Length: 314
Ligand code: ATP
Image 1 (tube, rainbow, N blue to C red):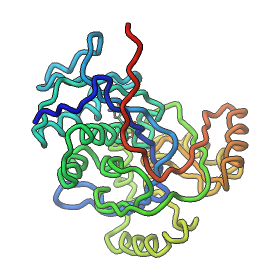
Image 2 (spheres, rainbow, N blue to C red):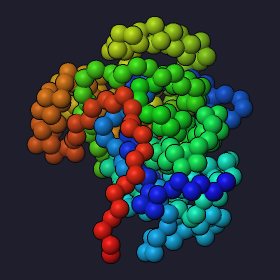
Image 3 (cartoon, rainbow, N blue to C red):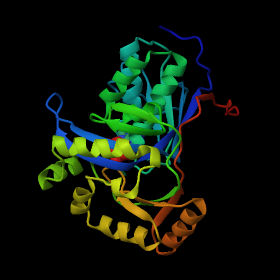
């Protein structure tokens, strides 16, 4: 189906980073070998910008194997781009045969950092494609889980309880209170490596343990998730792989952050503060100490895609 509604200038949206306010990892499940988990995922004000627009002269070329002639322009990320895979999966699932497109991504989310940057861009691309050629919720959900465990949340960012391998989402109202300080690491970590090390360390829960955590978390969510329920079962493995992470957690603790934690599979770390002012003060102290620290606010969602302004003629 060709849509007549795609503006030449394209559509744009934000693709927010996320942190796992808690991440409890259970056993692998038989059908696909993914880990069952229970997590509270919180989107942040820290975000990439993603634009979907018809291809123009001067755009990067499409990958040789792209059947639709779509391409991606994403400084800072080489090789296969998850956003482009999302667009291809969308076309394949819906039969959309609109003109060759370029996905333009302005990255602000650190790459390979455990903040779901690639998943955020993929989710944003699906929202943009859906705005051009509407698809039903079940189709979008199927495409998203096929792209990765964090993509379903990124279809509709905000505060969610994630179960299954991340695909069973319960949307929660609003956002967690407070502000966070994010500490970037000068190295990346592969999510697959961290899960493998977590398994090797025996740091996952059995099915009963996971269920016990699920009940405690769901029972407490109305109260904004108390401290004792904020854990990350991938943290031990992340520190085992990169011991510098333990120093980053100490640094966050030393400036008054509560529940300092690895974000997702790391290596980014973060901690909570009462409000923006406290987080800004702590981030400034950390920067003085040579850390790459930033403040981010929990966000309850993203605005619908908008038409980007037409750029001046070149
Ligand atoms: P995950 O979502 O698996 O937890 P992450 O959040 O730790 O991953 P990402 O920033 O998504 O990390 O990057 C993981 C890998 O994905 C990187 O090696 C990167 O090259 C690749 N990648 C593909 N597309 C993108 C994208 N649009 N943005 C960032 N990384 C991407």
